[in-house]
Amino acid sequence: MPDHPPTEIQIAVETRYIPEQSDPDAQHYVFAYQITIDNLGPETAQLLDRHWVITDAEGRVQEVKGPGVVGEQPTLKPGERFRYTSGTVLPTAVGSMHGSYGWVSARGERFESPIPPFRLAVATVFH
Image (cartoon, one colour):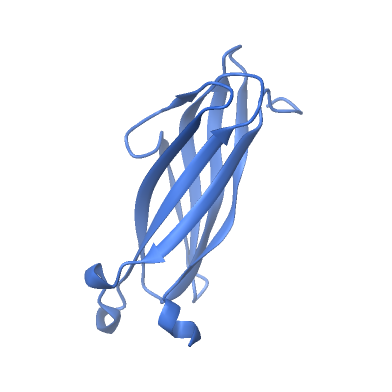
């Protein structure tokens, strides 16, 4: 891994609870998250893989690793954006996710960009 990534990747996340797919009585809470990835740096990069760490309110951790995102391995030129929506299921009404994306630059350098922690929560939990 290079000390300094060859390009700057910015990641933003929006989440929402999906009540119509959830069953709280069965401890089944469905959340959707939309990820926006912007290449703010000077070099083209391709997203190769992802690593997620998903934690529920009881402290149980699930790790997910795999190629690409939603079946794609997008290549982003400088200034380009990629947006996708995915989801996860938790046994609790609150949880969090964080992780990283693995990339390869146009020059063949591998690097990672962290996905900052974000919260998954049923809105009614806080009212």
